[in-house]
Length: 390
Image (cartoon, rainbow, N blue to C red; front, side, top):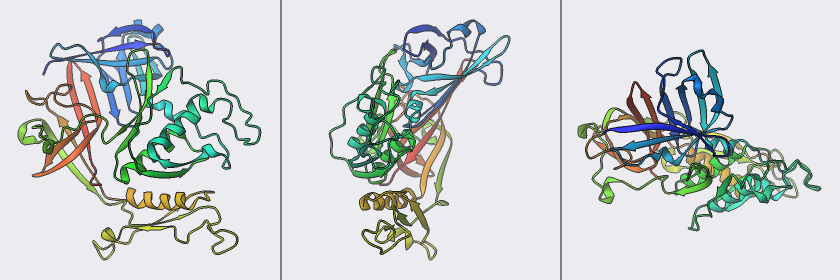
């Protein structure tokens, strides 16, 4: 189906600078190429004429605007990319930008282990929101510090709520998750919360989206990033090579890094049975009896270091997460081929749950990775589908 793509570029505050479709097919990264990955940091490269050099600022925002069949252009993935790399040549400039999700990875949990904000316990949506607020919003301003007694810290730009707003917590009933994370990267912590919820049966992800050209918003999503378009829900959309909307599909079932037994140890794990409290290995074991019994060699163990954690539920939660995360991974990759009944941006889009058929077997999968290349006026789209049987 005919589509047109431009990029709109703003400064770091969201003020418009220029819009162009002049993607040069020269240099080391010809044309326009971008990746969207749910909850992670996708990237964009574009080769532009040198005339735009004076408007390519650090953390300038690049918005990919795509129009299908003459409809108004929409922002791909409701996302934008922040400029972080420049390659200058005489007749072109290659710009590399990272998805706004990168902001989540720009802070650490700068709280000592004896402070409340270095650990969270409760429903995962509350944990996600509280962790974000404590490290990026007013809740953290003036209190993020290694010194838990005086809370002295440099608060400059601690609170970025004026530039990245926060969506309210979702308010539904979600799995309870416990984490202990002093000094860890906040992006990693947020992903661990989401992974723990997903592995417990409720898919969750957190992203920084771009509702408008000049605004950013931190959001959480449950069940799926986009829409539920499964074949079983009455939707007639089915991705299969027989229908012409998939090409070169490959289904991968990977059990190489499988884990069926996990032992977690917290503070005092090497002092088992000593007084006053054992925070170590006893009763900190998690296992999956079904997978263990699948083969005579199905007991596959790992140890999880819970650091200085003293909350037994948090330590056991780490063991549970290692076992759940050690399940075999099932995913499919394919080239997307648009047909009259299967147009991206009309019938499906990034983040949707869809039904994929490979080798005669149907799987309900999330379209969590989208990789688009625009070169020589031709758009090529590759997709990553992920299956979750929980």
